[in-house]
Length: 566
Ligand code: C2O
Ligand code: CU
Ligand code: CU
Image (cartoon, rainbow, N blue to C red; front, side):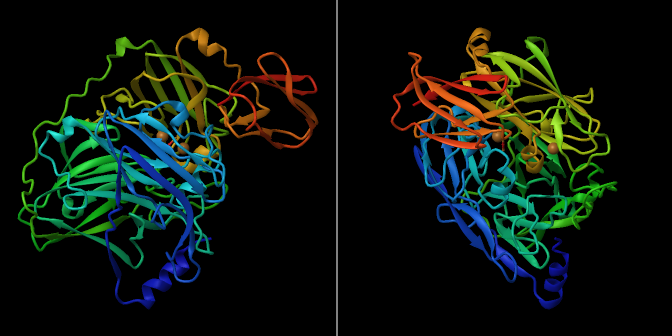
């Protein structure tokens, strides 16, 4: 199970550390994008290749998508991985039917074509799969990529933005592989560091040549579970300029930035006058507290040991060689960036409290829950009226830290344990790490898009926790009345996609016999089935577009569900 034996072998048998130059993913610009998600493999370790998922010409990860705020874009995704998947645009504000959550699966060999208007502020976002109970296994195989949103406010600032020259995308991951060299979604013993998809520890170093001027780095923690405490060798200071969903009000001078899974940050590093020097981007794991994956190993009363060799140690992430300046270099740091205007606490219509819970206080490897209930595709946890301003209070009652992520919105964190958060966390965000025993509050507004059928998700971005049920969902409706039409109290039946066009997939929990009927608007039965199968696919390609009713009956359980055929 562990990679440690192999790691020692590598260290002993090679005198030289393999150095690879930082790979800068290619970019795709709109308004039309085409992504081919396919199976591939990479020789990460001696011996067996690791099976991967990737997009387009990549064999791991995918191209960087450049979105321009205010433009209408369309994306065509072709699913060639041989398994059902989804593609989610993490951090992007868009209609739920194009959000790529678990309710909009792309069947094997099928394609999916979201189209929407880019409404987000300039920042660094990302895309990754979000298939029900398979997010971890698909994402850690490499099916992820970056999104850079550009907007006029950012464009007017004197900032490095020449991609790959003075503006560097950095997808940092620590993954776990099994003894067959395959990505393993179980976690806790993750130890293989990858930077833009290249191995970067235990005998491997990734280096970047960066010019002797102000450079920008866009950091994404795309790990399944581990948090990073980034800094530079010699504790060199840098400026954080952006959080997940936008610029900070002004550059924040610091020596550390902690990023949990899913979080992004943009930083400026001043390399002026340092030509010929070398420094390292590091993870200062020794400074992380117990309870955050990456900090000290917690004694585990039961279950597998949490003994990743990267826990609680400082390690190099990437080597930086400072080289000659580019033409027209940026050499100064702007004093201000943008004006974020968080909603005032007294504008909130409601405060929702989400407690992070587990079966007992001793649980460290899950399952974890929100408010004691596990995720259910058929249960909508919150019905939110359009334009509601809401405070969400997150309370971690477990022994481990969880990065909380919400779809649809960017939020403003205004409280951590009763105090004002650091300026690093006062900008627009969509992930916030809540350490054990802590609480935090954010405020946000649910605007622009309504859909009473397809919900948006909120979940822990530790992918194993998400897949094991630490997830909930909400719909945003035009009014409370409209939203209440959605009857989704069944725990027995999962129907997807809905809306559908070719195939309706139905999963039935339990194996007792049932009757299933589909009625059209006139009440005519157009499909019926008596079965005890746990999975059904109904071909609906010949049905007219419109609203149908699915009637499921088993013993004294009767469920009616609205089906939409497109
Ligand atoms: Cu990055 Cu719902 O996920
Ligand atoms: Cu997301
Ligand atoms: Cu979690």
